[in-house]
Length: 212
Picture (cartoon, rainbow, N blue to C red):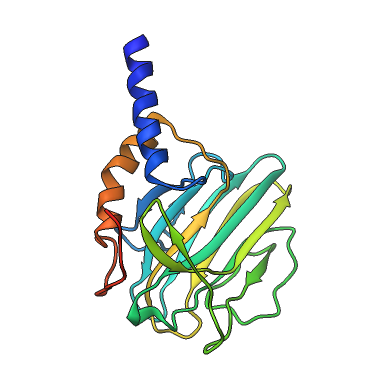
């Protein structure tokens, strides 16, 4: 048992040293996250994770699903890798759940009966965008809009991501804020981090500088 505990701590340290002060459990979209087959948050929505996904077409809408049984803080963000093809990729997203107001924006999906939505918009095309260096994946991203609120209405909740300008491309859905790594998360991180650092999650050529 002591040996397993030591191995766990060594692996955890290696994962955290590879990243920043806030490390996210990585996931890479293999099949499109649709309403019928969404990305399901199986642990707490508060636990941090970064889902490296992509809009296969300009009309693609990705769906993330989580359950609320008690008051919880929900954090979500949309970031985009700094690549030549994505200078104008500006994802929006919407937090959809029971008890929320009816949105005034036109949405590319149907809200379930009895649900409302909070829409989080990006900057307008052509407006300045800030960038940041993300040490975990060792690459630069365009900073994106974020949602950070406490919610308490129990039920099934969703977060929808889409590109209102229909150009499509790679983005990362950042969910959660608590740095929590289970043994399975550590293994996942050790497997996927090299893929992300070599741009293996991207669907376009990207010549930004990375540090190995």
